[in-house]
Length: 120
Ligand SMILES: [Zn+2]
Image (tube, rainbow, N blue to C red; front, top):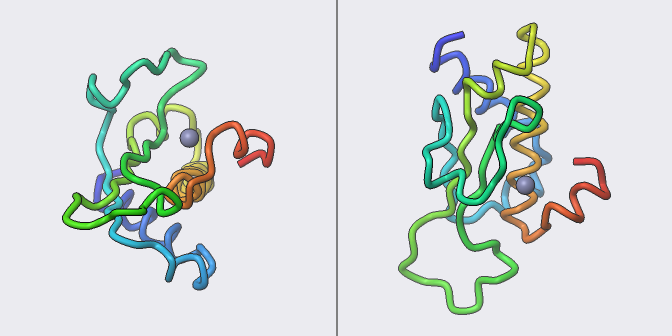
């Protein structure tokens, strides 16, 4: 799949998010990269069982007390990592949707532990 097709899927995944939630997204960019950069991996342990499919970088809106003149939040989806765990285009569509919802949840201040509990 080429990057344009992938980005198109990301856009529709975003459009599938209920409008009420979408309208709450504030100052956020969603981009596609092939693979994570070294500094994006940080301390995260990556192996074939545990790829980094997406990443949220920014200040969750729940923590924005004094929020001005800051860079937008950034959600990155890693195309090659998502493709690695998917056999079909349907699986890619599903995985993009799951990843977008997961990272958007971080934007709203929900941490991985809570998301794990919710199965998201
Ligand atoms: Zn997460």
